[in-house]
Length: 137
Length: 127
Image (cartoon, rainbow over all chains, first blue to last red; front, top):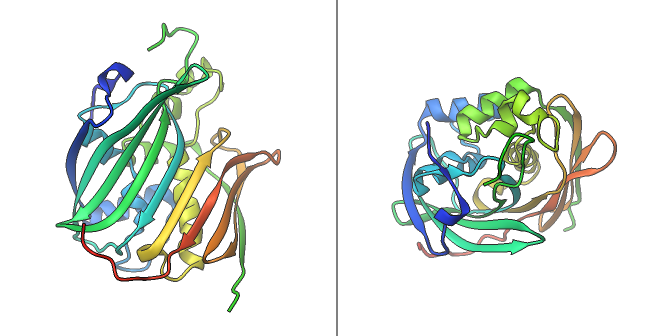
């Protein structure tokens, strides 16, 4: 997927979006293969909810090039099952600067119908990593 | 009843796994997958996703803590880069109500650290 890269100026506190993800067997097996996660038959690793894809889809764009993942907190509320159709509700909770770095905090609430499955807070340092031939974000 | 848990394992994440995770997860930033791009950055090499480290930690927590999938909580901070091909050690220790997490690089420095626990089940209302 070629999501546009979001600059810091395109983000604002309160900005939000939603997307959906179905936990098909194919998706679960691909996750297990990519992460080396060993699961028993029918089990869905809850870490599958932490992938970036739903975040980018909900926002309509992805992190600026060079963005670094600083911190993640996650709380699981309900075990996942193959076939679950999940809604990812994403919102920008905070944007702040510290020591000349730009920090963005996202909240992600994952729901199945109206049942809360998982909640996450994700902190990124936006556009931190520069290369010698980049002019900056 | 006290139930102390201690688990430690060494892992090496290769670039092929980073690439597979990038494609699956949508974390396909060039710092993870483009070696030429990464060479020009301050890191000099591609980086393993912090999220992939977290998932490896979660795998160990799920193995050791009954109820993790339904009541687990984790907070992790990524402190130093992990490079593909470099061994790391994933360690978890403590009791189900308060676990310490550490991902250590081969030089002993801490790549990631945090805490985890399994909440005591309680009635919760749909949000």
